[in-house]
Amino acid sequence: MKHGILIHEPDDDVGVAVEDLAAGAEIGVITLEGKPVGTVKLINDVPLGHKVAMRDLTSGKDVIEYGRVIAVAIQGAPRGSHVHTHNIKTKRWTA
Image (cartoon, rainbow, N blue to C red; front, side, top):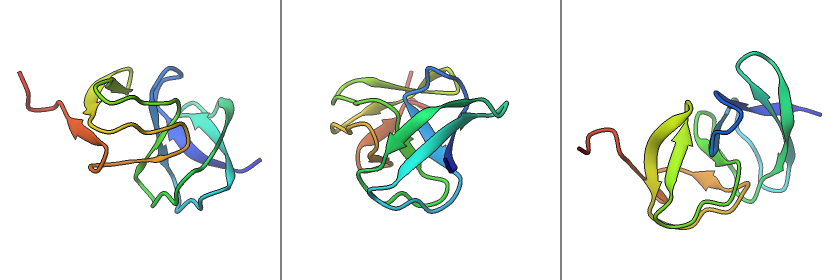
């Protein structure tokens, strides 16, 4: 199984594509420490460096990466979908 998605923490909602990924592919997910944590079937093409939903994200849900909230879903994103500025909004600069 090819590992093409990197996650920082096992419970993260999103992982990062480590290469361009094609819709329909079954891609392995691995932690920073190199521990395999399963697979995800891609719904969309995902460019290198972009995020992939590791679980279904509903609109209004906080999005976890690095073990902490990084964004809020502004549109639903099912498991395996491309996650980027079209469906999440950063919480970095909000108080």
